[in-house]
Image (cartoon, rainbow, N blue to C red):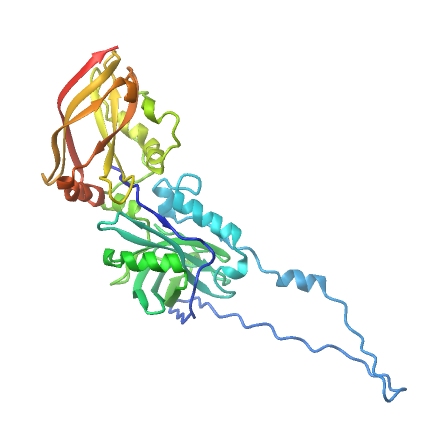
Length: 402
């Protein structure tokens, strides 16, 4: 089952991205060479030999073609294959949308450095404030070589703060793609959750320096096999990492005939702006409908969890689906949720959906239901989000027919 984090993304003011000196090394067959700064050509002069004290300086007209050649090409922001496979885009995902805006507002000279590959911290990070923390970086290629199967060492520090040092990151062709010349891609680096305060301070101050060393890559023209270097971590989005662990593909479609169920928001959400979590829910409606039961009420775990504030409990988002032939209101049901190892999130918890807030669950529709996770079940719930499957069931059902 596809799972999504609705993480608390902390956004700093994106005034720029600090980067340090490159100490890049490449053991592959195609080397990236640092482009030398162009030297200034001497101005041609002609001396009038008939006058000893006077020199006539004849300046050459500027070469418009040469100036055009020297103009820097804009750096384009492109997504990883893993972003697209997870169903993310700049339109539907807050982080990717912010990165796209940052790239659009920044001049080419602010992104990386001519002739080099650079990694820059974006000021954004993903966290659930419990166990998961990922820093979001921009990896830019302003060399003349296309690159894939990229491995590198990353370090981030600011004054007396060190976020991490020489973390080895690997980005293979199958999941990351190809970093073409004059493009930049997001890279997600997993960080120890103990560094949450440090990354918050760095993101607020934006005085960090990002170092990238020991870059090794392959040329995509040679159709290379992944190298999977030992000791490296993948630089992909956490949602995608969960999907990979479960053998899922965000682009997969349910097999067989899928019943047509209309997605309807509860009454209290009809006039509200959709959250990022609810947008992700709409990506899996067909998968949910495929699991519905004819002539019955069924419920489906979407994999989405939302938290309204750091002090609030998590809420899991489920889809309640009606194929009974009848409409229901003032619904109340008992519900149990546990992980596949039997760890209980909650047992026979009463869920109440009054008509004035929830509306009517009509036949042939599906509605999202937010279920609060109690403190004692949070650890088991986070296990479901991160790696384990969810097991859930109705314990009771009471409702009025409309």
